[in-house]
Length: 430
Ligand code: GLY
Image (cartoon, rainbow, N blue to C red; front, side, top):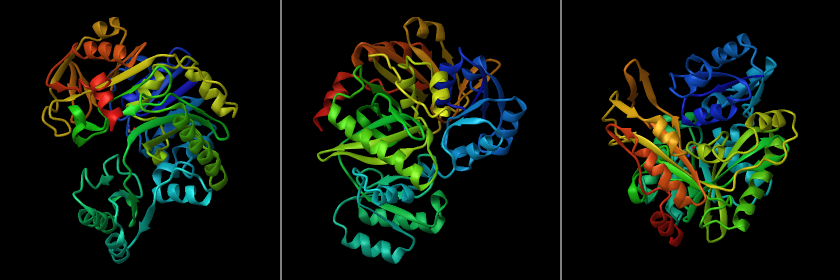
């Protein structure tokens, strides 16, 4: 069987790594990922130019395409591939609206009476926006309706000082059509602990994976600017130190109801559904959905997967998804980034990675935004690579991951606190 993985980063490297032993593997990526290029036949090209990706898939008689990032999903890559008889792990354009249209997502909760949503309102003009915010007494979150590559959401108390600044930013979104819509969504801000649940979906059935907690802040102690994610952990029981089985089940129930609602409202959703939740005093609240695996969260769950990913993909296509097994182990993922990230300071500098020493510790390396050149691997302006380790406890996995990080040299930085008891206990007390 021939499987094409679309996408360039560490998430796609982790997906490819799970498939490589069972299939003839192909990759379409925007630059040469040093990990993927070792295990797959590949073409370098912009994954957003979906007609070129489809051409490549047709020419190579691909059976299944696994779509990593959201941008090609928004452009309807799955519709085009399916028209050409290629099965996909990823939703169609209309089903992907669960991520690509936040107004659609919130309305789905209302129309199908799904619990766990937030107070929200969508605006297309500044007068109504001003009237609403003048009367709204809680702090808010401002979101563009469409995709912004993870850079559009701003939160009062974090990126914005108060609701006045929120209003200014919301006006900017409407006026400049940030995210592709002349609209903005304002949501109530909720406080608690964030967690992620990712699930395999075959249109009708949903199989959830272990819960994961990401760390978006750049610096130790959850300080500094928000990034694409500096690392993440999961626990051996599939829960998290602050997340009970009851809370996990409530979140999964929200996702199952969403899956049914998407099928009724648009088309059956096949692929990975990513739910980002906030655990509040009133239970889990849905912050947002993604129509793909998370990055870094994919690396936690894929490193624990016991069932073959190839078999899961086949079951998704056949609409008979059933039991998926994971190891009863904890996992810790730490991203290595250029020193000073998210500012760009060390672009193009050479780094040294002793992959053998890392693998000897039992840890794995997944490559992200680096450039492979004749003299070795060079940094770019984004996250460079992810280290993933498993263990019987989060602490055991963390220690292995931390040792593994010491085998990478250069002008780089990683958060040594992710997965440590000190940070987890601090979070748990919040
Ligand atoms: N970890 C955040 C994301 O994948 O969007």
